[in-house]
Every structure is written in structure tokens, then in C-alpha cells.
Image (cartoon, rainbow, N blue to C red; front, side, top):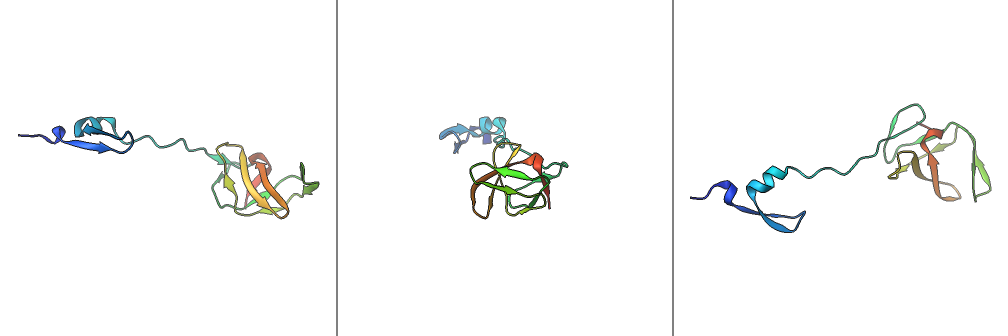
Length: 104
């Protein structure tokens, strides 16, 4: 007579056949570290949010200044809790610090 723990299951994470009992003791895979990015007032930011600049910022290499109150739409988060990747007219690869923006 076989018990459920005697059955073998293919573990896609490791690529090995392991017993069902061993797989159950491992538990669910740990989720990747999720970085929380917060704006200047503490609001949690997510991909696709719109933000407003709270300070005039000189953009290195572009020769222009982004004025306070400028709205940046459709941001994307990087792995850094203080950096936001975004697009703005005429500026490619713009990365802003979270401390200089407020969620709209």
C-alpha cells in the first residue's frame, strides 16, 4: 500500500523528481523581494502612476529644466526604492528620485 508521501512529483523550480512529502515540507516558493517606492509625502507608488514634480530639476545632458508642477505620466519602477523610470517629451531614459515627486 502506498501513501501520498510515497508519490513522486516533478518540481519545476529545481527540475528534479521529489517525493510529495518533501515538496510539502519545502512549502511554497518565497516571493521575490518586492521593493516599495514611496513619494515625498509617503504615498506608495506603482507602475503606471502619474506623479507631479515638487521642485525644479535640471536634467543633465538634456540642457533643460523640468519645472515644479510638471506632471509625469505612466512611470515605471526600478529595483531601487528611490528611483523612478519615466518618459518626458524630448528626454530619453529619464530617471527621477522619489523624494522629488508627489503622486497625482
